[in-house]
Image 1 (cartoon, rainbow over the protein chains, first blue to last red):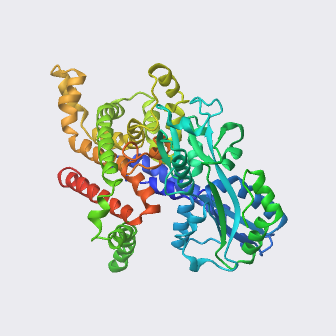
Image 2 (image 1 turned 120 degrees about the vertical axis):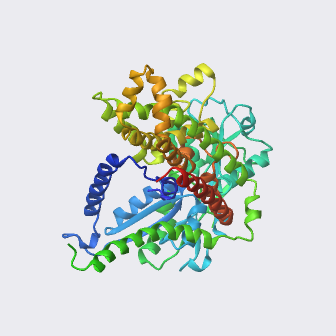
Image 3 (image 1 turned 90 degrees about the vertical axis):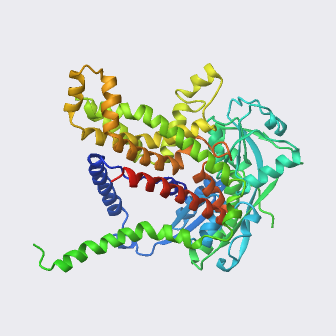
Length: 276
Length: 261
């Protein structure tokens, strides 16, 4: 359910001469698969035996919200028959770029209030921007903690492999501020394009440590070990949510997210209560 | 056969022009949206030159590896009549149809710190491949080698087997036949395979960012720099894209004039 930008940017395959023998079967398989897929997902309204009134709400959300929003969307769909919530997760900066280029979305939930700045405000409908949740930073290490990271100052140890989010995405900005506040020059080996890609490098055991959100450490369960940052250097990141269309179901989903039930789910996933 | 030749021709011309539009409209848009006056300033940005340098270095290394191991493989595939050869040929094409991100995951499983080969490497040599320029070369070779092997094998298939037979009767060893008869005669095929493999390596994104990560000057190749810049500085992304377009056109154009048909 991730935005496809990474895949499309990477797929770039000129055909080679002398591979005719390969191309024909590959094309045949591709066409057959497309036919099967297309046959399987015709417009819902056209299917017999189904209520024609199905509503879809499209939500673009920061990748740190992946697990929490997936759970809340499931609750919402269960309590609102006939409503489909389509979720797409990416870095907040990617989402803002997509929306400014006219991506069809009903709701956007971003990490960091500063992520909103480049958003074309004329696209925001209705009740404007609301605060959805908050988050803090935490160091994630593999469960065995091979780099023996016990504090933020350990991130400067030579030979350690530290992965951060790129400075263009909110978790990268927040991590840079925290490192600066602590006066630590981390041994960075990679700047990943979103927080989940950053976390993945730790989950796979390739990196010794990463600075991610507390909610990411909660979502990864026992696949990562969390190391707290001292309050003096930690950064609070707030998550604004905005409605872009007058789709009534979008307004309802937004109200649900901000309700006690929605906020309870967010807390379960390690988020802080939004500042009002 | 056709009742009206004009209609028959339109039936071919219209889709052909659609195909040209599909390919050229995005490239023209890139040219139109570029800030030409600001181009020198965009290209002087700190992320641009290291990314281009890394891309040129890693794609060159990829090309050398493709030629060294890919040419003999192409020759074996072209000449072997063993019953496993068709299966081997099919396996060689797998990375061709694999999404590059999947290739990156597969590389991590093999050569990552906890990978099948990588964990042993870490124990023995105390070194791991991910997050290094070597990882970039691994990723590029993984996706580019099939292009090279298939193109070169195609031209070797077209080589009359009597040439190798003749060389053998004159006393040449198989290695000497390969080196002095086969390789010179399929030089155009090798050149076109090299061009395709190089172009594929230059554009590599998914496997690289998954396996090698993204660190300026070390693993951030030009496509990665374009992707990262797009979110903070679209004009820098466009400028870098145009440089990549220019390099690709120059290299492919030079090869086309000489060898590609």
